[in-house]
Image (tube, one colour):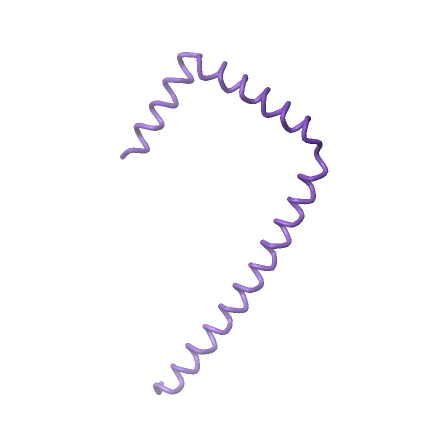
Length: 80
């Protein structure tokens, strides 16, 4: 293979990768817009209520000795 041929292949691959990147960015943008539209359709009091309930549930779970120990164990494993 000549250097010119390799250079053409590299250029073609970089063009293909750029096309793929643009396609992925378009998909991500579309998904973000859809998620934003869905979030706007949920009433704010409902979201706040669900967050409050989730907070109480998380607090109750955290107070259980086994849950607390598991979380601390997982965090200690993550340190390694």
